[in-house]
Length: 378
Image: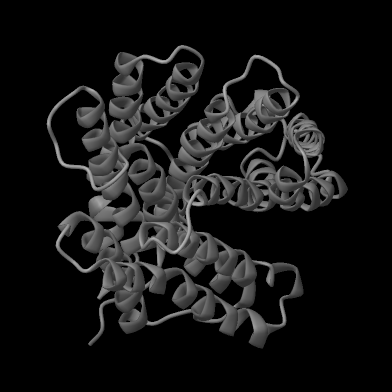
C-alpha cells in the first residue's frame, strides 16, 4: 500500500489535517464561541501543538530522513501504521473527555518513546554517529510530555507550562541542526550558480549552544539571554552565506530561507526578553513554533512529498499560497504577542491553519497514490 510505504506519507498528511482542524478550532474558541476545550484552554493549545502537530511533523520527516542517512529501511507498512494509530490514539483520548486520565496519559505518552526506538535501531546498526542525537532528543521530548501529564494527574504542580515551553526550545535545536544541513545543500543543488557558503563550524556552535538554552533558563535569565543571542546571531550569520537573494524565484527554496530567518529572529527576541527588553515572553515562543516550525515544516513537507514520490520539486500557485499564508499567519501571531487582541489571534489562527489545509488538499493525492514512475507488479 503506497500510503504506508514510507513515514512521510501518513504523518505529513496527519500533521497537516491536525494543524488545520486544531488551529481553526482554536481560532473559533478565541472568537468567543462556546466550544468545549479540556482543562486550561491555553495549556491545551500549547500541548497539542507541541505533542500533537509537531510530533507528527517530526515523525514524518525523521522516518524518511533516517532511511536516507543510514541506507536502511526504517519501518515497514505495519510498523508505520502502528505508529500512526498510536499518535492518533493520543489525540483522540484527549478529545474524547471520558477516558480515565491515567489511561489517557499512558496512551499519549507511548508514541514518542516508540518513535525513538524505531529510529534508534537503524541509526545504531549503521553507526551513523553524527545523527545519534535524534533518539535522546525525542526521549527528552517524551519526558516533558510526562511532566505535563503528571500535573494533570495531580502528581505535581507548576511544571506543565514550563515543560511545553522547553519543548519549543528543543524543537528549535532540531531546526538549527537539520535546517542548517539541508537548506544550503538544497540551495546549491538547485542553483549551482549561487554562491553558497555552508559554514559548518558556525552551525555546530549554534547547535551546541541551542542545546544549552533550556539549561540556561534554569540557571538565570542573563544566562538564557546570552545563549539565545549567540544562537540567533550564528543562525543569521550562516543564512547570510546561503545565497538567499538568488532563491527569490524558487518558492521551494525561499520558504526554507524565510523559515530559517524567522528562527534566528526568534532566538534574538528571546534574548531581548530575558534581558528585560520590551518583548513579551510568548513572542519568541510563537516565533519558533508558529513562525519557524510552521514555515520550515510546510516547506519541507512540500519538498519531501514531491521529491520522494518522483515528481518535479516545483511549487504551483496553491503551494505558494500555502507558503504565504503560513508565513503571514506565523508573523501575525508574533505581532499579537506585542499587541494582544482576540481579533489578531483569530486572524493568525485562520491564516496558519488555512496554510496546512491547502497542503492537505493539494498533497492528498501525492501522499496516498503510488509514484508515477512505479513499475506495476505482474
